Image 1 (cartoon, rainbow, N blue to C red):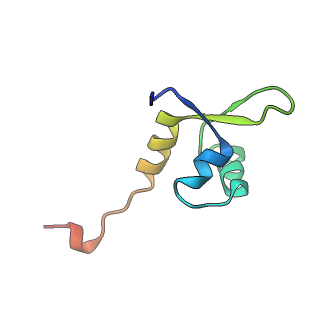
Image 2: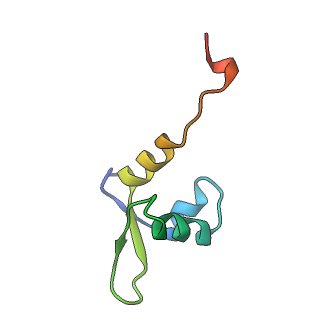
Image 3: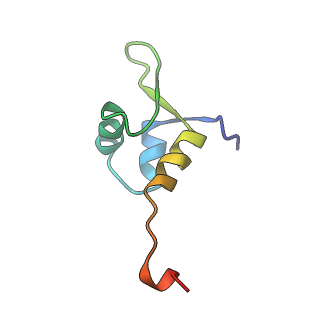
Length: 66
């Protein structure tokens, strides 16, 4: 599994358990980087970009603080 592996929208939606339309919205709003492949090829997201997207959304819970 490479950091530069390209994932389709469906695969990206699976991990956090969101709808594919949510992933497309993140892409349209330029929150998540993606590559558009052709007219009907759909979007592809680099695994590293997806992990960075998730990392930026992490929060620290009160019980995580020592």
